[in-house]
Length: 75
Image 1: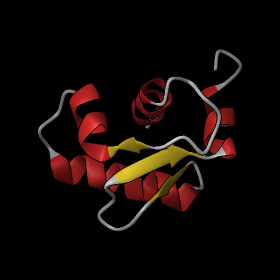
Image 2: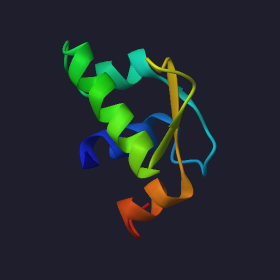
Image 3: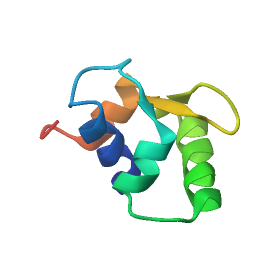
Image 4: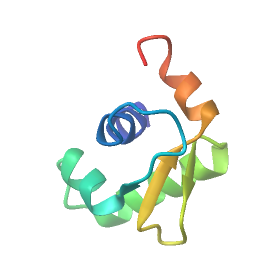
């Protein structure tokens, strides 16, 4: 999950929420062809309050303040 959150953070230029990125860019950043796994991870992170998405399945995502806090002080 930390890889997902870190990838979103990097893709959004480490700007504060809400800065959105496309899921296809996220999937490329994570270097996986497994769309189902990425969608499941996004749904879990949305459920935990770490990400916001624009739908189900998501086409864009953004970190939440809680998601950013979870990344720690290096953010």
